[in-house]
Structure formats: structure tokens, C-alpha cells
Image 1 (cartoon, rainbow, N blue to C red):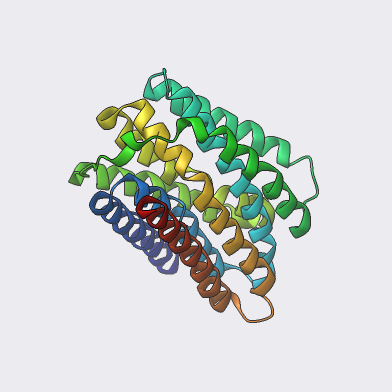
Image 2: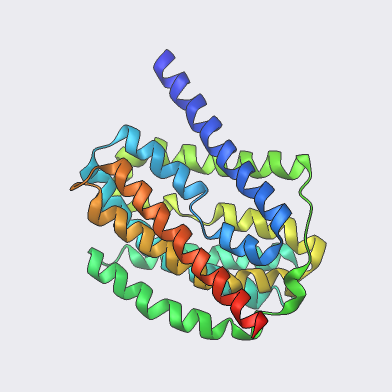
Amino acid sequence: MLIVVLGLLLKIAMTATIVVAASVVVERSGPFVGSLIAALPTAGGAAMIILAIEHTPGFIAQSAVGSVVSNAVCAIFALSYAALAQRRSLPVSLGGAFLVWFFCAALTRLVDWSATSAVLLNVAVFPLAILAGRGFRADGAAKRVKFTGADLAWRAGVVTLCVIVVTGVSAAIGSFASGLFAFFPVALGSYFVILHPRIGGPATASVAAHVQAPLIGLGLSLLAVHLLAQPVGVWWSYAIGLSIGIGWNALLWTLRNWRQRA
């Protein structure tokens, strides 16, 4: 019983720390960098760390396939929110986007996914999502937003609950579903909850549209975890995957600054 309680406390502390740290960085950096941060594995990363403690490298490698699939579904989620937020309220925009996520996630269960097919899904989805989101990306998203203590508390709580549920049922639902739901966009959705009432739907939609390109880096990170978890070990695969994601976002940030100076 003590081990179970300590494990639960570890999940709560780990997830809340990651989410709060990411939120503080977003607050101080503004929405463009916020979109880069939003694409990093905050909730998903916490879930993956806990899954690595509880499962074998083989389980982690296979769950990463589900996460790569989930990454493409998250791109559709963000695009759906961006489209709805142009004219709709926060509940309608976010609720509609979550319905789209669940619908797409249900469709993915009809396919027996491999790493190759998961990558091909991302290759098909992201160019279309980036092109479709072009009209939603605007300079109006440059306004910074200050997170309150209450924002951080409920955001950390919601994300932590999601991580606890996914990791708690991982043995029952299997590796693919664990990876799929580990990247359920609860952290991204909570970010929209904070921004939408403060800077408006269209400006928040700009953040959602910007997040498409950074999510490509997340997909590459997850692919690295799948390929390396067994050959080099789970923790090294996580370190390499995170480095790939950060490097991709740094490249996007550099290119954006270069275009602004040109």
C-alpha cells in the first residue's frame, strides 16, 4: 500500500512540476515561443517517464507508435480549435475540437499501426494542417499573458489527473492505447482555456495554428524513442528524443528571427 501511495505522489509531483515550469516559460516568452513550448512533451513527457518506470523497453517502444499517431491527431485537434475559435465561444471551440480528437482517435483503432504507417500518417496530415492553418496565423498573437497562481494550480491538477489515469490503466489498455492517450491534448487545451478569454478567440487560434510546425519535431522525438528504446535503453532514447524536439524548435525560432530581419 505504501508503494502505491508513494508512486501516486511521485506522479503528482512530477507532472505538476513539468506543467508549472512550462507555464512559467510561456508567460515570460509570449505566444509564439508559447506555441513552441506547447508542442514539447509536458503532460505526454510526464506520462512517458512514469510508463518507463512501470513497463519494459519493449512496451515503451510500442507505445511510442501510438504517440506518433496521437501527434497527428493533435494537429487536427489544434486546427479544429483554430477554425472554431474565429467566431465561437471557448466552450464551443474547445468542446468541438475535443470531439474531433476523440472521433479521430476512435478511427485510429481500426488500423493495425506500425512505425512506418504512423510516420506516413504524419507526413499526410501535417502539410495539409499547416496549409489549412495559414489563414489563422496572425501577428495579433504577440501579446503576452500572465498566468495567475490559480491558473497554474488548476492546469497542473487537470493534467496530473489525466496522466494518473493513463498510466494507471496502461497495463489494461495495452501499449498502443497508452501511447495514444499519453498525448491526449489536455495540456494544450488548458493553454487555450487560459488564453481565449484574455486575448480572444482569433488571437488564441493563431497560437493553435502556429503549433502545427513545432508538433513535427515532437513526432520526430517520438519516432526516436520507438527506434532507440530497446537498442540503447529507454532513458537514453528519451534524452535523444527530447534533444531532437528542442533542436527542431530552436531551428523554427531561428528561421522566424531570420525572416523578420530580412
